[in-house]
Length: 230
Image (cartoon, rainbow, N blue to C red; front, side, top):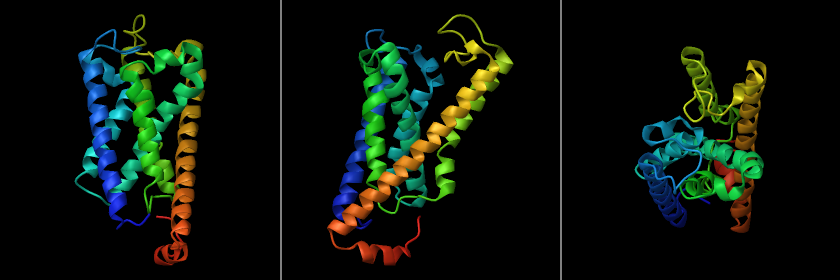
């Protein structure tokens, strides 16, 4: 899984192109709004308030950047986008799907944002060589979630909870049980996000080790990197 491997480079280019295309399709469907296309979304620009849309849009932007620039910063951004979309994937699989039905969660535009794009982003990162693995990068992957949480709370503090869904500011209904529970929910989500980053890093290490060992260059690769995480 060498960085100089032409096959890996081609795979990364194709993967980035696919991510950009799928995110563009999903954004078109959410921004133009067709009730038959989606569930749990707002009309037009208001769809940007959802973490699902923001995380997928971020992934699309990162993929677009990666088409023209490859470096340590790009890999960190890939780590962040894989974790953010991975959070969306996890919440849908473990909570929203069982509660509301997977057929609604994977319907039309949400098929891209809840399933396909997150899976591609996570697999893409797992297959990256020399991926960032240090604790500081794992913590940085929670920053998107932390920033979103602060923005969500700040908006409520400034503008109030608002009216009825979907026109309220507490559109995730975290304050239904009070501020104490809402803070615990956000803390739990941040911990889950950190856990996802750790899992992705672990799977990446296993994938790289398997590839290097299967190609007989494991010792050489460890020697070239000094055996340290990126």
